[in-house]
Image 1 (tube, rainbow, N blue to C red):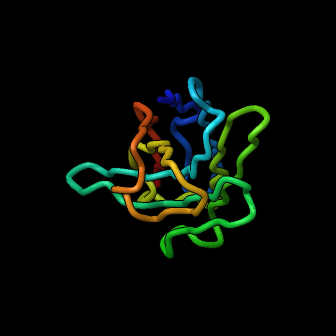
Image 2 (cartoon, rainbow, N blue to C red):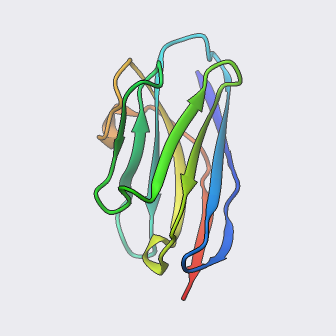
Length: 124
């Protein structure tokens, strides 16, 4: 098992930037894909971005493409989500997730491990 802890959320004005970070601990020696999902009030959790184990392949939701970038550092067991040009509709709780396998999964069911989430609020 692994444990995930997100950090970096907060309040930002529209057009601003934030960088979320997720630190993994536990059995990090196994091969994990990493992903970010978000859940806005009254909505279902949705895929944001994912990165494969090597870091060579990423997938990004159309709604954030060109504005958000996912990256990972396997030596530090961290995965980051850099968010630019934030919009009020990006307001949500952001969750880090890990799933066994080498691909950059976009489907929530492929992720077995989840962090507690970090709140991102974008004001207009």
